Length: 152
Image 1 (tube, rainbow, N blue to C red):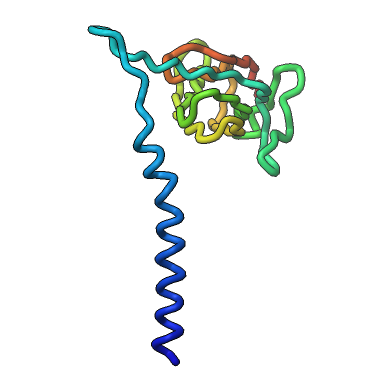
Image 2: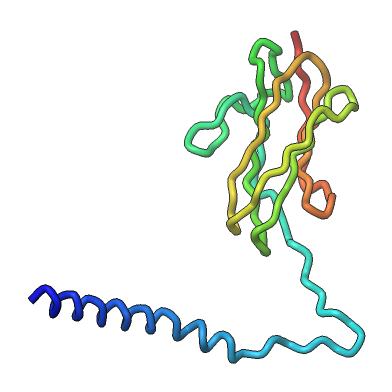
């Protein structure tokens, strides 16, 4: 009886495995578009937009909290977040958050964009000064920026 049950289970699993591999076999028969002579097929650039962004003092349930009012933060907060909702046509890709204080770059943080709509953020310890944070595409284009002042 055990051999019969094991045999039936093996047959069922083998059938499921065959069913799963059939779509892959069909995909292999499709031909990719041919490039013209001497010209490589160009991959379209990743189209990125920032649907929403915020400088804030915290993140709750993947949403910004403690949004900076009047573009000013108190230094005793200790840390600021730059939260971005990225919409990407071609994934996976990356963006960078570039943090600057008083005109000097302080940090550049690379963030993965794995889904067409991704909420992501970076954080930076803050001290008094004029701050700017930019969301930068993989190609180096500034997509969004925010400026704020940290006061003692």
